[in-house]
Length: 288
Image (cartoon, rainbow, N blue to C red; front, side):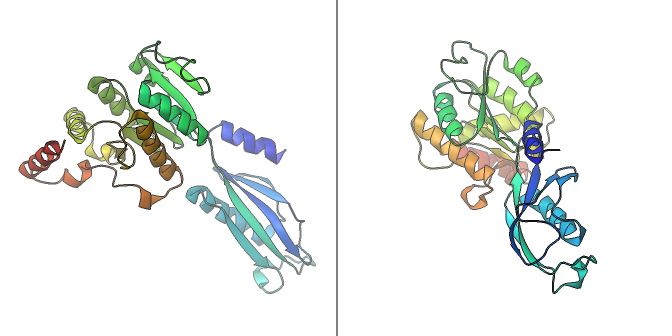
């Protein structure tokens, strides 16, 4: 079984893994430099780095690397630690580099207007695979989004029915109207997408969240929604707004928490008395 083919297949399937590689050897070890082992997200492995306790520790570390999405290096001294005594004539040291194998970052952009065109360009260059959805074929087409993974020109409800965002997916809602934004957000918060962002003023955000909770959706679903979407860099033009959104997508992908504002105003207020919540909402509206 070829480990490289397995890595490619893992990414195609939208799954995670981690690759452990022996990068440095001193003395005698029960394997060889550059030996590799792939640990899949279900715990199964392909390849070996020598077996025994070393491999067991690397397996556990690989699981942690998948979760953190950050590489790490482990060092083992087979001379000094009796737990690595396998009965073999090994007395060396080795360093093992473990790196995550992650599925492609999938960006779903709902709406195909000016902001979407610019966001598509920036996000594509940043390594996202972009799918654009709009119910207007004049906007959602290959001429406007030539290198996108997919361009879907159909009713939003029909498109959403056949899309299945996973934990490596990012959803940005920039449709042309309040009604469509709400339709998409209703669906988005019930997916496992890593990131959900909706464009619009604080007033619009409040109105949409309130309406959806009246329908019975749990307030907790909105805690991960970035709205208004994008980092606050004073963006005004479609090009600037696209950069602000892309920056927030990258910060989320790289888990740079210090760059991200608290995602939702809603969770801070869900347990407040109604009069205080309404007063807070009105104060936000007056700022617009």
